[in-house]
Image (cartoon, rainbow, N blue to C red; front, side):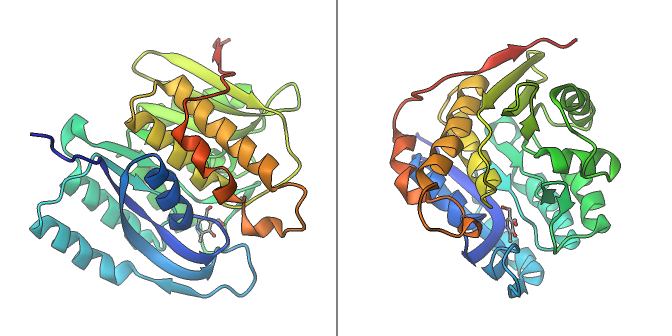
Length: 292
Ligand code: PXL
């Protein structure tokens, strides 16, 4: 018998009403790729935290009840995917969620260790959050930090990583913490581009997907990237093609947003590019990286 006729993803992220981030990105991306998203909202916000005076309703106290109900229903998931967590206590709950719902190799655990970007910790977070996030990373099969998050996770230093060489060294330290696959985003490369650099411990290969640098910072692109990557892996693409799909999707999304009279804080115009997720990968530019 088919277990879950549509694969299920438990998605533990915040719900920000305005601006494109977290669940407002995760759900449409994974639904468009044919997956059923089962969300646990970690917090409800009026907007993501890059707008001034955002309102924040922390849902930490409600999560144990939701988990308990899902246990009573004996729910199973093909993937568990966490992103922005609303409090340090939620990280312990996530660890418990993984212990309870991960069914060996049948469940893929992706942790996007959302902590900061552009060399800074996000407004709602403090060092306790960083310390707790290190625990969660150990439980993941795949992690998708940007370079700011890598520096925070390794040395409490958001500006630690500045190039591809540093990234490779950092990836080795991160895989030693537990995850099989580490994918680092927003890495500046030698040719003035921005790259995604990844490592798979199972085959010992490093990959790089460079894209031209675009002078824009749209919030939520990290969430979009990780969601497309997860969907691609779940649908059976190999790691380098999944990296290609996710990287070029973001690039296409950013290009489709440029040129409008538009506040960058609103994120990319996702609806203009969502249908492309249904097509085979059109553009492949991955490279195998040699470790020096
Ligand atoms: O995209 C990451 C993210 C998720 N959720 C909230 C955020 C941010 C980044 O600013 O503020 C609430």
